Image: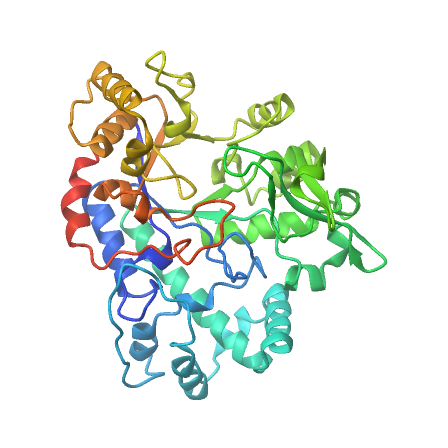
Length: 440
């Protein structure tokens, strides 16, 4: 039976405090999904990052902006809260920080807290953050405990409503991170300096290639330690999420590395951790193939496909790229072991994409949908109908596509730096509650 999901990042939830968080709106969203028989909520990365979700400074620390002030008040840790203007863009600033400090001053440590702060990587992050930002280690331990508690409460509630969480695992941390500070041997370095930067060759999104402000892994050192650094991370993520979307799966087969100081065009591919890592990962019996959804989009080679098929991983497909409008067919409609999107967080919205097509291709898209008995005049609904007819076992639709929004509502434009990236959010759920009924 086909399963359905909605992609809505945490920051895109409605909020009275500038940015979506782990508060009451998350629970309301889960109720909406449950009432409409939606199985999955995909949330994108929630790790503490360097301004962008796929640029983690820690794989274990969660994003501090996601602490719910309403929940802090429920815990009796803060008193009154000032509400902010509700807009359709997330606000990243220090608005919440005074409330965090008030809560910290009123917090009395207890057994659950002391158990949580035994996690070595949480201690590493708190120490890193203290050295970088100036607050005490104990302050950051407190914030991370609150985040972990609030998130796990959400996950428990979602599961009780038969909703599963798909969380993303970014492939690399940023250069200046707790990961590189405390696990430097896991990254390619020489004389204490990074020798390569991660990225991609020129592609659909960027003709000059991309540079990701991240180091690359030292595969030989990872292998010497039996891949413990990566395995521990995967095991931790299975606690946070029901399924892990493994970003940049190509990098586990072979990854692109760019000499420090060179352009994206001057990089080259080298072998990744591949079968050796996944064999060791699954030996633990704590992570299974079913836990993982791999992001195998973009430039992949035959060996990447062989690696994917060897483990029978659920892969991904974006219909904006796979529909052949010249021949009126889906170029890749042969497998059921697929999570299909009309478009994901890096894509234009369905309507924005449709607007970008010339008149002939607009007609061809409409004809493609009609041939598959998807008759709705609204192209976003027609594409949702097609998704439900295609062979993919899981279909995930962005909240923007449920609402039929245009390109101004896209989540991210890869290869660009803009205030519009990672900032779109819902003002409320009113229209969403009505339009989600079209996803059937």
